[in-house]
Length: 443
Image 1 (tube, rainbow, N blue to C red):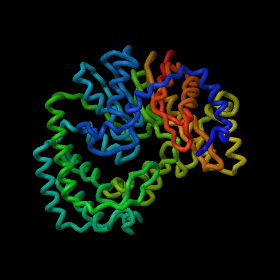
Image 2 (cartoon, one colour; image 1 turned 45 degrees about the vertical axis):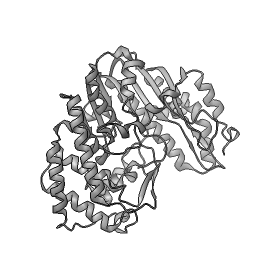
Image 3 (cartoon, rainbow, N blue to C red; image 1 turned 135 degrees about the horizontal axis):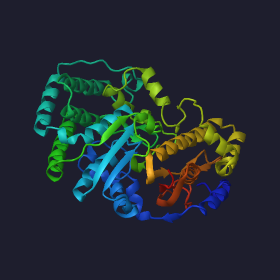
Image 4 (cartoon, helix red, strand yellow; image 1 turned 90 degrees about the horizontal axis):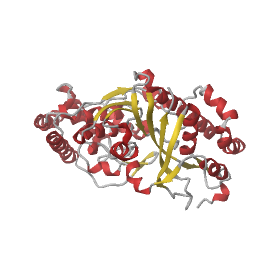
């Protein structure tokens, strides 16, 4: 177990905490976790660990920032599978009129979000009919396995199972494209992990031993669940507003088409600085559903993401961020860690640290421009512990993001510690997930 004596930077972090409105709300633990979503209609269609609760938006609008009122324009620039967008739809039953916009770069994850928020157009009876037709048609198809070693070697999923998944995918696509077809494909994607040899575990795919699972049985069950969810939600939410989903880079919402000064609330959870490559974690779904077809396309996408993992391509850091890291508050907070990394010859970790917070600077700068005066940004972030036991260091993401927000003109209303994590560092409150609530007070 790592002790605080191995982490001299904590002294500096504690000083910075004193200048930030800090509170603990451990009853918010479920709000920063997706665990409750697996029981909710539509939200449960695909298990996505990198998300927050569908109930967080309601908590924000009813209890944290009720001054925003009932009519809200919402932006989630890292919307993932669309949790915030779907929650915005559902809140119309409470009298809210939320115009929600999401941005997502991962092609498969964006498809998942689009399918979920497009649930009103799914024809449930036709869904089950087309599913049966696709299963029968797939028996006569013999697709080629894509050129991904995890598939061609059978390491992550057997070659036989890969071909069955590919055949059903092709059979579904033979009949056209619609919200109903997309629901069939998402159902297929959601059972890939069940019929594979892997389990998504943190930053990697873990090879596991599991009993043989019958593809058609779990697939039919999933399609039946989708049909039931649509019918159930249609009866309680007869005329939902359809959110807008943009495929693009959440770091640059203005480039994606968001108008300056048009947003009342930004609610998002950007990637954490945890070395996780989300394209790698969801590679089976990306390749088996045909979103990626060549190794080069796969590598290019992995390199183009938020700088949170080693495979990101080298990129130019924001000049404003560089100035702040050289002589401002960010220099003070990171100086000790950066020097330790330099002397420890772990320059790649230094590059990730600088690249991550440069991307965060760029993201918050654009979010600030997107917000109207007195608009709010609520950011869900997680701090992390890196390095081996002989050279550990803590990345205080919530403190650094708060400082960046202040540098860009935000007023920090509250940094709320929602969930502590005691992994590898027992009893230290810097390992945590937090809500950062920031307000734009100037034009």
